[in-house]
Amino acid sequence: MDDDHFSFSKIQDSFSIKSVKKSPLVLRMIVLVFAMVCGVYICSTWLKKIGTQTAAGFLSVKSVDRPCPEPAVEPWEIPYLHYPKPKTFSRAECACNPVRYFAILTMQRSGSGWFETLLNNHTNISSNGEIFSVKNRRSNVSTIFQTLDQIYNLDWLSSASKNECIAAVGLKWMLNQGLMQHHEQIANYFKMHSISAIFLFRRNLLRRLISVLANSYDRDNKLLNGTHKSHVHSSREAEILASYKPSINTTLLIKDLKQVQNTTTIALESFKNTRHIVLYYEDIVKNRTKLIDLLEFLKVPYQELKSCQVKIHKGSLSSQINNWDDVQKTLNGTEYHGFLHDYPK
Ligand SMILES: *[C@@H]1O[C@H](CO)[C@@H](O)[C@H](O)[C@H]1NC(C)=O
Ligand SMILES: *[C@@H]1O[C@H](CO)[C@@H](O)[C@H](O)[C@H]1NC(C)=O
Ligand SMILES: *[C@@H]1O[C@H](CO)[C@@H](O)[C@H](O)[C@H]1NC(C)=O
Ligand SMILES: *[C@@H]1O[C@H](CO)[C@@H](O)[C@H](O)[C@H]1NC(C)=O
Ligand SMILES: *[C@@H]1O[C@H](CO)[C@@H](O)[C@H](O)[C@H]1NC(C)=O
Ligand SMILES: *[C@@H]1O[C@H](CO)[C@@H](O)[C@H](O)[C@H]1NC(C)=O
Ligand SMILES: *[C@@H]1O[C@H](CO)[C@@H](O)[C@H](O)[C@H]1NC(C)=O
Ligand SMILES: *[C@@H]1O[C@H](CO)[C@@H](O)[C@H](O)[C@H]1NC(C)=O
Image (cartoon, rainbow, N blue to C red):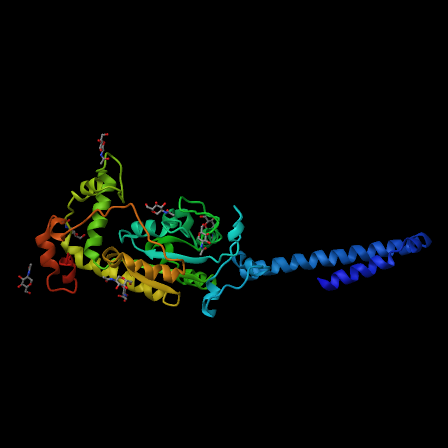
């Protein structure tokens, strides 16, 4: 750039009115040279821009002219700091606050709805919900990446979108929503854009199964005045939903539990090279301060987190399953025995 400016001023020097008057040919030459220099300059800056865009994807454009001071972090963290430039709004005074990218990887009925409301209660965290529950967003890897690009560039508008001062942005992603199907490419994307994974699982898969069956029953029967609800905000609503006691098909029970375990194992294996944390719903319910580990993982300032959601199924399992005796017999003596008696409270 400095070279260009230098040659510009040389041309201007020689462009004196006297010489122009003397010879129109000189004038023509000068205009020609001027046009050429301009052309080369415009062309080269344009090529430079295109080059960086195609080489690194638009998420990395941040590095082109970053005026932000280097934050005081450990060297390994630096790739995890992002400075997105949203198209839809200006980050204003927080343009230099680094943003971390995360994805909550989980399964249906594992407490992730509740977990996400806790995260979103943080002033600086924005978790945009179950984005890939919409089928056409996950129809192929390109639509998945386009959607992720938009989320991580802070251009995704949802009820969880916060102001310009967010420090961590992400989404909730069910394993069966294209994630495992395209796990290789997605793990690469996570690596390329330094996205951290938050695995959220449930320890007691039998309780999860009850929640799955009850939720699916409510989808058809709409116990709350004709409205299907997966999450509730009052203990009265929770009682009504919990009044339905599913029967569990014991022929399939062990196979189903194995299947869920298998999916979990494969997910952990597929993303083992992604920076990640593994959390269990039960642990957070028992000890809310477990969330400190999460806030430390995301490197956001500590805050107490609150959710207005109320747990639907509480207490002993025997009161929640219609065919409790059968279920007990089926699991007795198997590796899943522990699921039957897990409430020490
Ligand atoms: C967090 O929850 C508390 C209590 O419900 C509420 O007053 C506060 O506004 C919430 N903060 C955010 C950022 O949602
Ligand atoms: C991906 O899906 C979108 C929408 O469903 C479609 O328009 C696009 O052509 C597909 N791309 C590829 C590479 O298959
Ligand atoms: C969190 O948000 C507050 C208020 O919006 C802002 O002042 C603060 O700088 C943010 N913190 C981080 C770590 O980005
Ligand atoms: C159902 O509707 C009735 C009458 O509108 C209301 O009193 C009751 O609280 C509602 N119940 C629930 C669970 O929303
Ligand atoms: C349990 O599932 C098996 C296999 O799908 C089926 O044959 C059987 O009828 C089911 N039992 C009940 C009680 O629904
Ligand atoms: C998961 O299930 C598949 C097919 O049913 C099997 O090939 C694989 O070994 C299992 N993996 C684990 C980790 O259990
Ligand atoms: C709760 O979790 C925190 C953070 O992991 C831990 O330091 C603390 O000892 C736990 N408290 C109990 C009672 O388990
Ligand atoms: C579980 O199995 C043991 C023997 O293997 C038996 O003594 C016990 O009664 C069984 N419990 C139930 C609830 O079926």
